[in-house]
Image: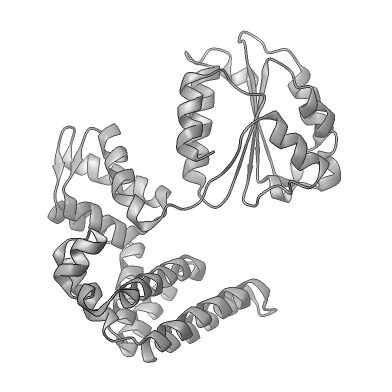
Amino acid sequence: MTIEELLDKLEREPLAPAYTLYGPETFFMDQVLHSVLEKAFPDGAGRDMNYHILVGKEIKGDAVVREARTMPMFSPWRVLLLRQLQQANAAELEPLVPYLKSPSPSSCLLLFSTTKPDGRTTFGKALAKAGPVVECRHPYDNQIPAILRTMARKRQVRLTRDVEVYLAEVVGNDLLALDDALERLRLYAGAQGTIDLSTARTCVADTRVHEIWDLTTAIGERKLEKALKVLGKLRAEGLEAGRALPMLARTVRQLWTVRALPADKQKPDALAATLGLPLFVARNLAAQASRFSGEDLARAIQALHEADLTLKSSELPAAVREWVVLEELVWSLARG
């Protein structure tokens, strides 16, 4: 089941005893949470007394079961949200297994985790039988414009095509960041407004994500000195290094996509038609891709993989580790 199918199911059908969502995209989890709370407490009555949140290591299976077995007050539903389920002690979750096999008809459990529950365990099997288990992954690049249009429609504003592309390039596929950018644009443009590229640049350009975009552009242009200068500015402003790594990976992936096309499809006009990009974006991407060989990009992918492993496993202090690894990676990608 996809997240879209789950949201549709929540609109049409009664609540299930449990919903398990896992993955990196918390924006989708928040959407599901909002839908469940709207369905359980349509007028808000009883929500304060019947909605409870437990996070990570504070999740104790026996306490959850007691809460779930308690009849709701002034409401037909009791909702329990278990966030960061991957941090909970596995032994503490075992009491949930018999509950999930025979759940309370008036309680709904929401279980949110960054990692997929192991479907081979008794707990994982019980989750799968109690309700939907859905992955919340970051959307693919080609899905971003449609998602942006949906976000804009809910805010009663309209985006021009070049704004959709600009936001996708500057912010990337982080939906929480995109949602925040759109809210700022709505406040600037007003209700029923049309947001053009000039407005988007005014509202969204002066952000750290824009500076990461400057970093990826410098790498794409193979301007090492400029890339290291932008990296130094990001570090001085206290941005977490891990925020930059996904966008660097995205840049390399885009360049790889272009280089994988036949030569006649790599020209700006053909590239714009093939990938559905505005011409000015296709020109920049084609120019950047021409500076990289297939071997360059293969090495770049390997360098990204090694950087990711080092960030997760090195014994260096975190403040040192992140920026040493990132500086070496930028040097490798931009210099070639």
